[in-house]
Amino acid sequence: MTREILSGRPLRLLQMLYDRSKSMTVFTVRIKQSELANELGITRQALNVHLRKLREKSYIRTGRGFLDITERGLKSLGYSSNPAFLCLNISPNNRVEAYKRICTLPIQSAFRIAGDRDVIVMVERGRLDEILSQISQIDGVKETRSYIALESLK
Image 1 (cartoon, rainbow, N blue to C red):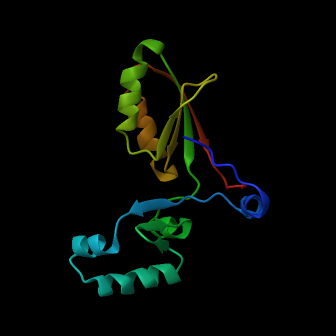
Image 2 (cartoon, rainbow, N blue to C red):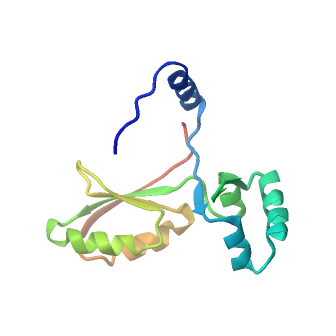
C-alpha cells in the first residue's frame, strides 16, 4: 500500500484532528440502505425513520454505503466499549492449527505479534470467561494472560 504524502494545510488539519481525537470502538456495516430495508422487509422511508431515531440518540452514524454503530450504540446492546485483551503463548508445533481455532471463536480481533507473546486477542469483556474456557481447550496454548481495559486514554 502506497502512503500518500500530505503537506501544508491538509497535513496541519489532519494532525489537528488526530491530536484532538479519542479512540472509539465503532463497528462499521458496509451496506446500502435499500439493501438493509429489503432485508428487514420494510420500505426505505420506514428505514430512514428508524435510522434517524438511532442517529439522534448517537447510537449510529451513517454515510454513503455504510452505517457505524457507536460506543453508545454498543452500550445500549449490552456490549462494553472497553474490551479485554488476552496475550497468548503458543507452542511452535501447534501454531498454525491454534491460529485457525482462535479465529473461529467469538472474538473481536486477533493479532500475531513479535515479542515474548505470540498472539493478542481482543474480546468483549462480558465474554471473557467464555473465551478463556474455549482457549484453554486449544492444543498448544501454553500460557494466557488477561488484561481488561479500564478506559480509552486516546
